[in-house]
Image 1: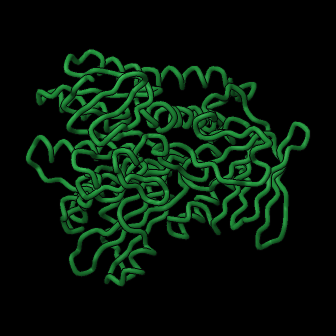
Image 2: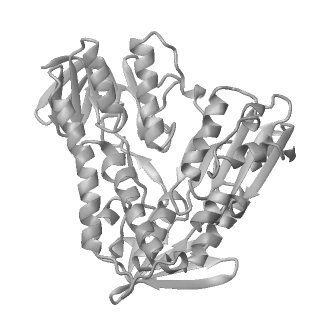
Image 3: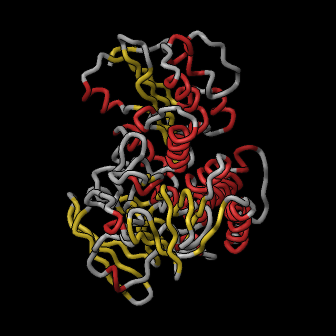
Length: 457
């Protein structure tokens, strides 16, 4: 039985980085990967989808070229085979780089296969049993597919299989009106598909404020994307070469008929076939591994990082999990999950940058607060670029003067949000930014102006 100081299961964002840190500390490390190196982000998440977003943006901007005085003769066409080739080229660098770096480290042994716990101190991979004093679970998640009547009778896509397309679906039905669904909806609309989004909640991206949901819906509607919200009673049926989705809503029963369907209604953890019961590792009712503030499970010597622990379904939260574990184990630095501030982006065009609390959450908390908003059409940089859709919103604690949260739906919002995030981590009063001199013309230059126009919430 091969003995190691540490065994890492999964090569997503947290696993390889931790393997190298542990190896650098003199530990003999085994890392196990059952499929593709790099995890969700590299293979079926951020890297490929944002590459598709870039191609879709290029097509969209090309169609608008005349607005900028640029003439394109013969119209704009999309070659999906070349789009796919570019996507594979970009993600290939990442996945090969992860594998190469692991295999080239003499302190790390790489195993390919499915790891299952045999006990709290051993796992079985293929025909081998590996043991260690420490285990780190980094197995990620996958698309959740709900039990919809008739769905098992048709071919459907998930976020993973959608990436295999080398053609433009004539009519794509997207079930799920949140981050994954909306990004794919806009991508394929810009590639040339007719697109219809079906969402069970009463509005898109229901975790956001109502004004944000409405603005995103307006942006997608303006591009010709059909949207049905507040639906229930979904049923799917095959109709010749097409797919029919029947649904009920406040406006009554209706039917959407398309050629292809994408299921984008959430994620579930890859924990159901790890033998966690044999290790005694506790999970919640959805299968997420239960962890403490420093990512330890209920079993001493076993940690869980990334999407499988339910503490954040993002690449940046997964990598931060690695940083927390490494800091506690190797640096005598007691970092905690509760130290981090919620932050994420929606990569539609324009993108939505989000940090901290929403307006609804601030109102519910009862905190005395101030708020300022600004439409993107008032931002010179956005106006010059011809990208004036969206708005900015920032919320401040009236007593401490610290920023509570912000939403930036607009051009460069996914980058601008970080200047607010950093100020929040510094626990600095908003007056620090209010009095800063920002560069013109940028989107960021309007943040001090907004902070000078705060009003009681």
